Length: 346
Image 1 (cartoon, rainbow, N blue to C red):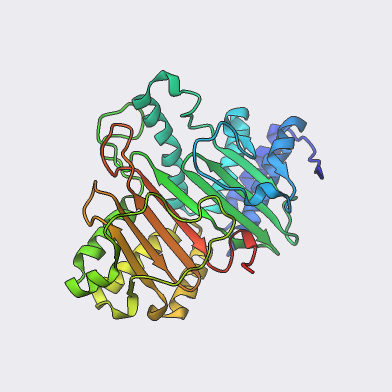
Image 2 (cartoon, one colour):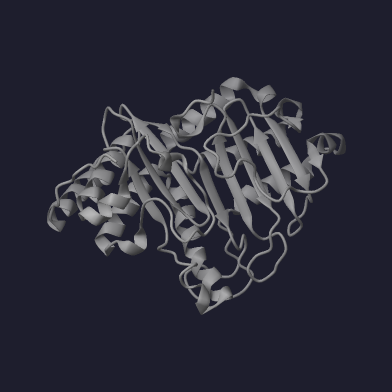
């Protein structure tokens, strides 16, 4: 394995570098800030940490993604970093996401404390909000390809940069257990917290607001599948779109569907989100299909899929939460039909 060496720098130098970048105006592309923050983080690591944190771009680890609570995974976990190193790693993630996306990611990590509360002290090692792994693939560069991922239980965020641009930002996976906190719990996430609230609320409003004939066309199954498709696979299999075509919806319903798509797109910075939405709008409403399976009310298993020329969104909520509340455990993903990880589908 090729090893990249980073000079160790003092905390004062890193602080100055971070402060300089924070003072800069936001660039059109988040890639330059991601590069600067990734470089600053890597420079703070010792050799044993770098062995985990910095991998080859073309290695198999880059496309090996998942979101289950594994004993260990690729990358350097937050729990093996000092506080300044954690701060630097989180700054790289913050540069890769929008404000809304970063807030969601942070709350998903804090949900591990909620699960630990419900599951008891024996779950301490398994449910740890610092058990999230940070990885850089290849040396961060303004011209060459390099990658960045942030992954752990219920989070898998993956990026590729090239020529000063983010050229891939999928798979984008976020999940929540519980989807809604039903009880009083210790910590900063209180009863009633719903990290992925809009992803469900807008969808329920959309399916239940359709006229009966259109609703029937959107329904593809009486029972929701147990899981999203293509979990852990570097590519999706692009299937024939199912469900109701956006072009056949009334204006209000089409607006809700577009708003739902925007919620997923807005996890990443504006420049990337605009690229996603521009491709969708250019393809037109005849290219977007909305499909639903299962119940059309909360806490009964449900699933939806939004399929366009350039993307597929899926959300499934069939599992109970840690307290046993039915269908209170969301898995949601955005995939690129042209190829995730900047790897075109052949």
